[in-house]
Image (tube, rainbow, N blue to C red):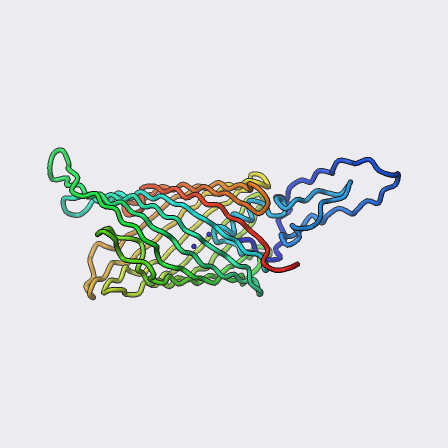
Length: 330
C-alpha cells in the first residue's frame, strides 16, 4: 500500500508541448478562446475541448505519467476531490539457504486492491487488501543429488492495511517537498495455510517521511521510515528501519521511468520472549520501473527488482493499473 499533490503546479520543463488545434471552416472573424494556462492543474483536466486556435492541454497532458507515477508509488498525494483504485499483481522469488542442511525456496504471488482518496488540507486516506498465494519448497542438500523434501501451497486473504498521508512542506528553493505517512496493518489474515507461512497475521504500525526535489525532467525522492512490530501469537517479527532513494524521469508526458534503491534493516525475531540470534537481516533491493498513460485517467505500471543481499528476495515483478476518477463536483 505507492500520488499527485493537490494544487501543485506541474514543472514547466515536463509539461507537454501543446499543438494548435486544426482550424475548422466557419464564418469570417470567429471568436477565438484564449490559450489555456501552461500551469493547468489536474483539477482542470475535465474541461471542455479547446476551440480552434486554443492550445490543446488534454487530460493526459495535465495528468502526466510522472505525476501519476509519483502518486501511485506513495511520493505525492491524490488531489482533493479525486480517488484512485489500483489493482495490483506481484510475483516474488525467494531462495534462502538454511543454517542446517536444507534450502528453502518460495514462490509468492499476491493480488491486491489499493484505494486512495484525496482529502482536504492536502491529506489522503489509504486502504489496501491483498490475496496471497505461496509455494514453499524444501530441499535436502545433504544428499547427492539434492532431493526435494516437500512442496506445499498455501493461500488466503491477507492483512488489511489503512493509512493517512499529508503534505507538510511545499518545495521552495533548496527546500524539498515533505510528505508524512502513518499506516497500520490489521491482522485479518492467517499466519499460515497448509503449513506454509503467509505474509499476514501481523500487527505493524509504520511511520515515514518522504522528501521530493525536482530538477526537470527528473524528480529525486528519499524516504525514511520506522515500522513497529507488535507481538501476535507469542511471535514478534522485529521492528524495521527503512531507507529508500530513487530518481524518476519524465521521458515524455505519457511515459515515466524510475530507478529506486530500497534498504530494510530488520531486527531479530522473538518467539515466547526468546530472541533468535542471527535472525536480524539487511534486505537491499534495486527496482526499475516504467509507467505509461493508456487512456483517460488510466495509468499502467511495470516494476522489476533484484535483491542485492542474501536475505532479500532474489527477484520480483509487479504489474499494476491505476484508475483516477472524481468523487465530488468541481
